[in-house]
Figure 1 (cartoon, rainbow, N blue to C red):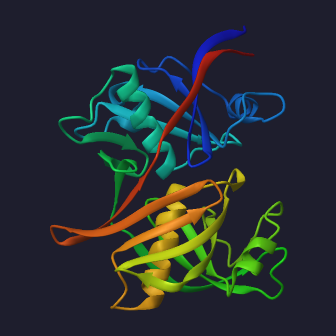
Figure 2: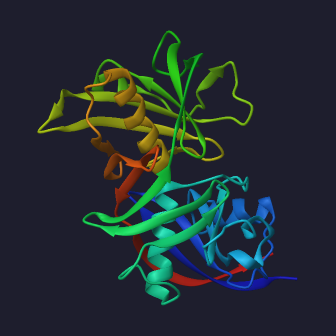
Length: 288
């Protein structure tokens, strides 16, 4: 039976989402329904769906200690994803604008499939602590249309998997054809987002590193931005640059600019992502 539901459209640096308020966890979405909502010709159009649900109302949220809300993020093809760096800022913006949560006096804890993430307000809009990261030095070769010979990639996990590829100049970055999915060898068990980066010249200015990036998101395709991908790209270049590399980075993507910081939290190193979050319009849509 057709069902009419409320939605809000939002984006973070052009990485856009259909936001579905479902505080009591009553909405069940099939992969096909998510794909239709995200279809840019036959649906609302988005890179993914953010279902806003209380942690106690979804089995995956039961372990989200200290978080009232759980971000049920789905890729544009309907598949579930662990985390979304742009999406969680948009999610926090929605909660604040709806009056369901406040970030004015204290940080906001949000449950995700990659654990509880802490969001605060920042000069750019919102900042999320993505937590510790892992570097995988195993050899990965990446084939991409428009690049020529396969290039080595560095595996970075920031709650979801990424492979970062360094390119020599902006001409090669601009010449990439990401309408075709990059091929990875060996193929990661759960796939990966693939980022292509070009360092700025100079790489570091006034203690802040700077790079440009394009990304192919698994389950989506090329997007104007990918928050966790931005963090992974900055971490990869920081890794390649060595011990003297800065802890503060700006990353230019087709949809705008985001900032990345690394800090020490107890005995761990965490990576933080900061950027804008915009709510565009609200309406109703009928699901079949």
